[in-house]
Structures are given as structure tokens and as C-alpha cells.
Length: 217
Image 1 (tube, one colour):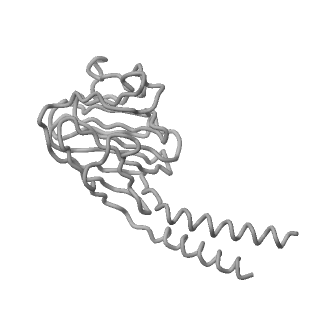
Image 2: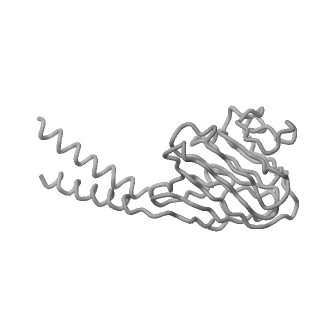
Image 3: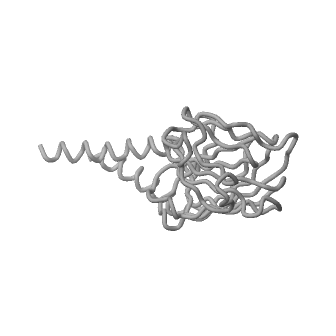
């Protein structure tokens, strides 16, 4: 009985914390990485409403690990300086989902990503860079270059020559000596649970399952 009582109390406390989660306005800490392994994970609970970050150079690309629970609500937009920003979304394995160049190739508006190609809930990597710093895989460019297609401003899936493979690098073709700040506004995006919270939840659920098995014997 003590096992089930302790597990139930712990599980109740964790669920209580989740129920009181507040929205998060995230600020980049240091420099978010350009690789999946170095991506800045937005830990916490509840919705992530914004990300404030900095371009350290024209070839700086920042990646953030996020969680999408309700794909139909997903929407991301960004503004910043210098002008001409790019937005990317990769799945949990680093494969391209959607990319958008800004609509005008000038000004602070970097355009947006909609839920058009976001079909499943789960973990994703959100990327931002400056034109024309594009993501690469072992097969080459993951996304088609929008200027080459004549459709700048549209959303593109991973139909580049390297679209079938995961992100490995960037082509470092951004503007020289460019630095500045950006703000990303998000809808339908959740923070990633802290590893400690996940472990505690697993222990609590494991204790409950163990007790039920013993009672059934």
C-alpha cells in the first residue's frame, strides 16, 4: 500500500505542476547551435509564445528543440534585423518538414510557417538563418532554393537533392559581417519537459504498475 500511496502522491504532484504551467517567453542563452546535438532545448512546461535571439554573424543559424502537441494550431512568424530571414522546421530525426523564405527579400518581416505540412505531434527542431544560409544533409541541399524556383515567399517541403536525409550542416552562404536580433512568435508550440520530470513520472507510473501486478497475483 505504501508504494501505491507514494507513487500516487508523486504522480498527482507532477500533474498538478503541469496543470499550472504558464506561457514561456524564451530568450536564447549564449548561441543556439547549428546542429541537432547542439540545438538549444526549450525546457519547461506549458506553451512557448516567443523566442528572442541573436545572429552572431551572417552565417549563424540557430536551432531550437520544441514540442508540437496539436499540429492544427501550429504557426510561427519572425521579425528581425538584418533583413531577409529564413525559417525552417525539422522533425525529431532532423529531416526537413517545411521551409520559407521571407516574402519580400527586404525589411524586418521574415514571413511565417503554417501548419500546412505539419501533420503529426511530437518533437521538432525550429531553425532560423539569414538568406542564403541553407541547411545541408549528406545528399546536399535539404530544401529547394526559393529564388531558383521563382516562388519566393511560399512554403516548401524537403524536395531538395538532400531532402531524404537528416540535417548535417549549413552551406554558410549568408551575408558577410551581418549581425542583429530576431523575435519569433509561436502558436501551438509547447516546451520540452525537463528530464528530471520525465524520470519522476516514469518512477511513479512504474510503482503503480508494480502494485497492480502484485495485487492481481
